[in-house]
Image (cartoon, rainbow, N blue to C red; front, side, top):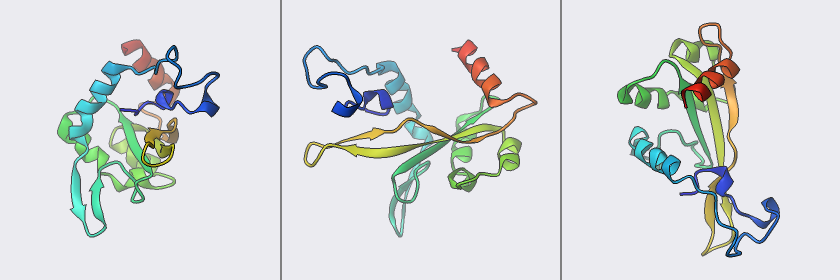
Amino acid sequence: MRWDPAEDRRYALLDRDPTASGNKPRTVWMANLLAYRALALFPSAPTPWGLRTTGWSRSGEAFTWPLWRPPAAPDTIRSLMLLDELGKPVPDRRGLRARGIVAVYRAQRIKVGSAPNFKINFTPAQERASVAWQGRTMDAHREGVAEFL
């Protein structure tokens, strides 16, 4: 589904021909399946400007999502994804922390190639806001997540 920046296979990013038979994509199929299952948490709705989907910028070129702690139920996650604060250039860290959000990330959507064979990829995510959670920094939170995985 090309959601992982590692699946961006342009010549400029590789040391060999991306179309060669021995140069296979590095797709993590189970991660893509998990992401696909999570699409139910990102509802879409018609607006006067066209169809809009939770998490996407108005231009449709950037996708923003939070990380939260403690674990949350699906309805709570849908509510967190709808926060206007997530789309701001400088989110209010205090307000996010009050809702259990420990970080906010954003990835750009890019087109690779030319029509009719272009593909859509994501750039590596950029952290938009890091919020201390119960006295722990986001780095400490990441270490805890890594231990969990």
